Image (tube, rainbow, N blue to C red; front, side):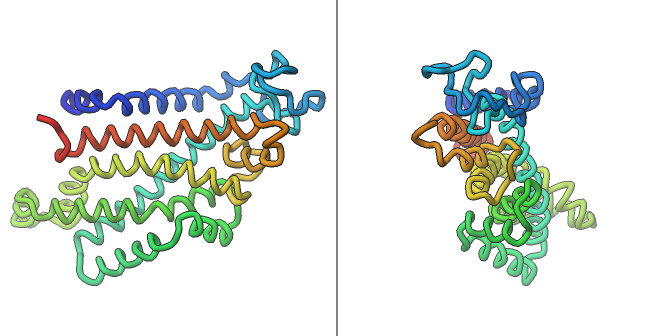
Length: 283
């Protein structure tokens, strides 16, 4: 752990990314206490009020209001809860099923391995956003279906990582020794091998978090993701695209939120890869 933290701190971008992720997580958890107004509350006398740095701003609306008179700061804060929640459940979905399929493919090989991996190749051959749109079109636009669609798109990367790790680990002496003692399949692959696959799996999950948030925002922008009035950043961008010239802050601020969270998770993933991958560790 000490070596990991030392290597992780050498990557300044990763430290910044971790700090941003922690701040966003705290904001999401404390959203009910940080927001000045309820995100759904409509102020009919305050439509498209500009943020504090523009003329005509109001003190009670720090970042202004949208076209319906809802406080933008409150909706952005609650949007962090929705977007981070989507990312978390996408990672949970793709990790759960990715580990199952990856372990089965790596342990049995043969036609089972070929069937699973060719299925993953088909999923990877399709454009991710197009596949997400197809899944949501079949299931219907909603928060849960957005998680399922993005999780399915992200599944092949996890399956390939787990399978590669299992194929590498199963040739090592401790696995051969376990087999010689008559250990069961469950003990060999779940208890012995799987814990040694956590490092690449953790790195992939971190990148999957940012990809999940970005894909969910893209679906929301297309009107196929989280549906209004739930405050999700992609949906907020979609609702505000008609006001890009007259009220540019309605587009800029949710876009900046998406940018910050995606860059933060990517920086964090780079730092974890550098610290956990023995090939890049410095001596």
